[in-house]
Image 1 (cartoon, each protein chain N blue to C red):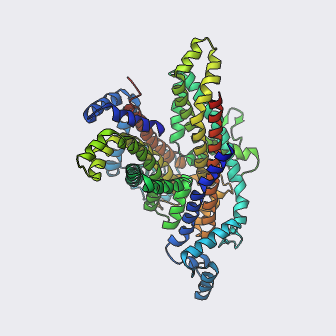
Image 2 (cartoon, chains in turn yellow, cyan):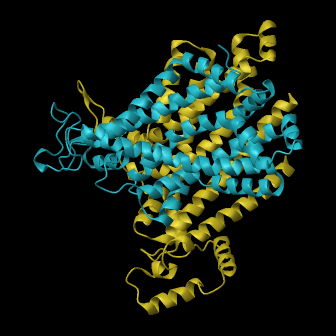
Image 3 (tube, one colour):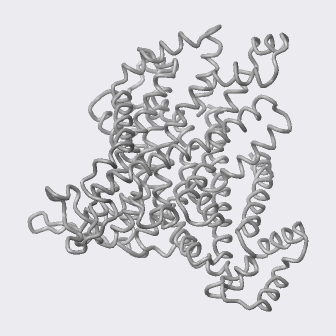
Length: 313
Length: 298
């Protein structure tokens, strides 16, 4: 297990190098002079020259790249053009809501997705199965930002059922649970749909296998067959999907944060693209990618662990 | 994805020249899958609306009339009017072609690049394979929409740039599927035999490898159209894509969010339109997958 983790960490190094090359080259791919962009639209030629010097833009590219990586290693991602503050500080300030949002939504999508998928598989071809699969298909096909607006419409603005008004939750911000429910549901829905579909097909594949038939023939209770024998093996592919899901949830957080006016990292990047605050965009995208790489490592280790346990059995 | 690779292995092993048999089989299974047929028909109708619809809309999609702004659905304005008094029904119809255009072209970019890279990777193997797949890994290290945001931030905010961005982030998916299938086909003996007969690499790839990996590509392309439409409308919603007054659905939704209190229909309707289109492609794609899958009997 230990050697596996070390090997897995070593494998990430080329990916991380690639990611940094990509974010590094973003700066040089934008049309126009990076120094001009960094110094601002109204900068004088002297200021631009000074900025070129400060950014090391006169150095050869490999030297610039090494400087960039050194910066990343020491947590120096440059300064925001708008506020002048360190990019790393700006990002750290905004990181928490995004990570919390992604974690809560992942948790929600796992719980709902697993339960729905298992019910669907166990009662294959029943009305419950059909209903769940139709709902899952809708969940996959809905733009998250639209779902968010609809939830705001019905559960933040609300409507009246007799004396009750359904405006239970808040439509903007992040902090209290009234603010968190709607964004988490918004972001978790697509994930729940994907996990439900995956769990169902994975369960069905396992249920058709010989050893399950044997277990049933032996007279093992149906409940034990489903939960102890089938589910454990069916979960393995689901773990991978959950890992990938977390990544797309991180991406989806950008839209959700925008709908619910949450001051997270995604919204920071979008605002910064519009304000042409490039260092923030570059840093934010790097942090997103690194987070995703980290999650994938954790998922791989978990996957391996689940596999191991089954091997032992 | 893993399933599809196996699928192909089975298919390739099963038949000496399977094309005709396979297509007949495919049609039989596809026509039996009711939801897939419905999905396909809906897609055809949507394409038809996109092509001829704009000639029949009751109003000009961009004509403003502030006297009637934010009115709800009525017999004159079926879907109501937006904050500039524009007819939402006409805008939805005009937006249909934009949505389909975005979906098709984004997937065309992703598919062309992804299939090319995947075939090269799987067919030649070795160092080329390692390099290509590492680059794909790096691209996959960015959550989809974040990579698109990075690309748009470099290229500038514009609908065509969104198409390029969404296309680029779907490259790795195609590359991976095609690589796996190519690997499976390449190992078959008849490919060796053809090579021994003196067939060139290009001929082998186009005449023997690609037809065999076609079904997973078609399935993935259909499903990718659905996700591409979602991503692209998301980027437009964020203001990165279509610029006003283009009747792009994501951008219309974004306009509508400011009027959720007084006129929720302005945001609701474009969202419903997106759901219908994406749903049609998802259902169609699911049906295609089942029809292509030899494991699904009946």
